[in-house]
Image (cartoon, rainbow, N blue to C red; front, side, top):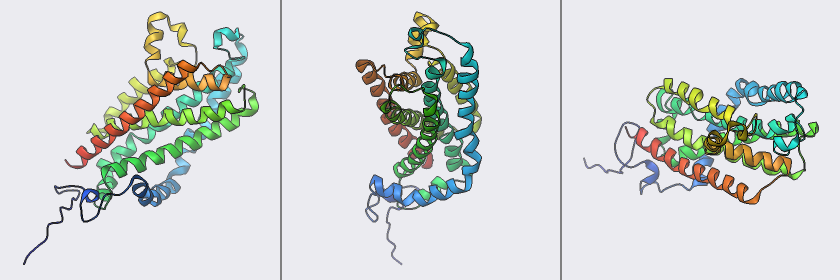
Length: 286
């Protein structure tokens, strides 16, 4: 009996992915994400309760404890707080940017490992017209939605505290913190696809998330670190997000510096996206 080879690719076979097969045709970016929207919506409906505290409540506790209660004991010249009229106004932009980073990393570590190693949903998705690019894009769009919703609530709740110098500042800052989240999400997604064991995630959080959270200008001006260490801090991606968010919230925007901040974050996002796709393609073809 004659058989026809369609070049189909399965989770355990060789050959091009279904989305690259002439029999199916390559899906557009929008089509790939739409076809997975129901999956991600269903997954969110089943798990959203577990993330309420970490996504919405815990960040506000940080603001209350460090900005309001601790900040009440701090009386500093605004010139030393980068133009902020209070310590609360100083740390709020940094906390929002840091929260975006932390949330994005959390959504691209264990969930990515799960899709590859544990419940293997990525393999199931790849056995359809979807490609690795489509899988990465849909997962990142879910992360974007999570970061955007959490940071929007964060900024709205803080508005009555009088920490924003203008009405448009936090609006623009919202898009910046979403960009911060995507910059870290793409890079960490790529890292997760290349790890064979989840134990390495401990190093990501201990040696990556914690130091960046503490020394990227969220809690104190990086100038306090001295000439050498301040330059090191300014080379960290999170500093660019914290700095730009703070300038927008405090209405102290410096055009050239803001352009540099945006350029760095966009470059990291694009490079990380390509790296994540490459990593998932290679991992799923193992």
